[in-house]
Length: 201
Ligand code: AP5
Image (tube, rainbow, N blue to C red; front, side, top):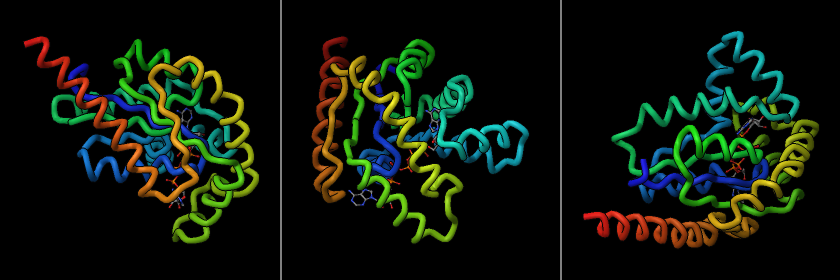
């Protein structure tokens, strides 16, 4: 795993994590694993587990890390050997998730934190909900407020612990301007990895 990049994508609800991940996938061909999408897939399966996950997600709280990390780990294992890099979107959401990921999966090379005001995040989610044919269950004002509170409670501890590998990016700009900064950070990680591999030859 150490030869390909593992990048955590951090930021509050609606800050633009998924939007930037789509652009990264297009440019670099990395494997995009969104913890929220993996959980929603489980919910859509209609399983008992999915029903329990839905209850938690509709309150804006955090699902247990055992559930999330095992979904992520399974998805990573399926792509190992063929992936050019992993984008772990919406993870870690609290400090211990990061610690457990690095023990059970692999160290992250970089964390990109998309910083955005709460007002902007709410506006973006409400606009997304209004424009989409299938509205997400948690995209209502009450749950958005709860998601923001969960985010507020946990984020500083993550940023403190992973300060050395985190790049904070102002996400209140045009999508393409944000992406230019993302490219610089990822190119830097790829260059370091190439240099390390060359030194080992
Ligand atoms: P998750 O699915 O991860 O949702 P989220 O973090 O709330 O984020 P969103 O997917 O709503 O937004 P986004 O940041 O991807 O923004 P987007 O690019 O779509 O998590 C859902 C739930 O699952 C959690 O609440 C929790 O219960 C559970 N969960 C997930 N991970 C977990 C974990 N690790 N542990 C425990 N539980 C977990 O953009 C939003 C809108 O803005 C779009 O319409 C977009 O077009 C627009 N937009 C984006 N960028 C810009 C820009 N620069 N300018 C203008 N508009 C923009």
